[in-house]
Amino acid sequence: MTGFDAEALALLTECRVAHLATIAEDGRPRMVPVCFAAVDGRVVISHDQKPKRRGALARFRDIARDPRVTLLADRYDDDWTKLAWVRVEGTAEGMPRGEAWP
Image (cartoon, rainbow, N blue to C red; front, side, top):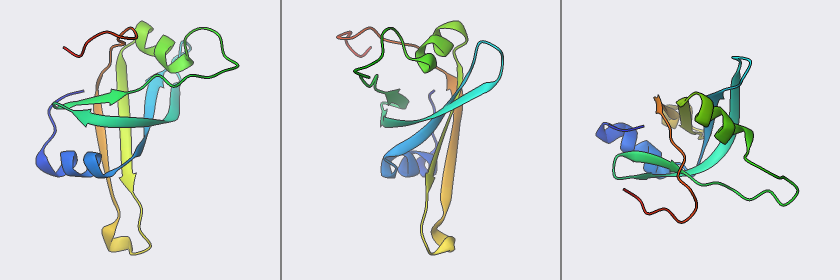
């Protein structure tokens, strides 16, 4: 996911958590909260370790099969004039552990 305008990048930089939507094998959307960072015009999402899980997480299996994704980040405030959100649509790719950032 690349190419943010200044306002979208500012909101992405401010937010700590977003929701990532992938396409499940049966075609339905799958959405999960993720921690992320905006780096060099891209969104980077870490692979969190689940101690009781074996194998790839569903979101990464989804991305390997169909890389189309949507990321939604939002800012909540009790003052509704400060509410904001940004949606980033694009394609994702997995990077093996330890691989250098391109």
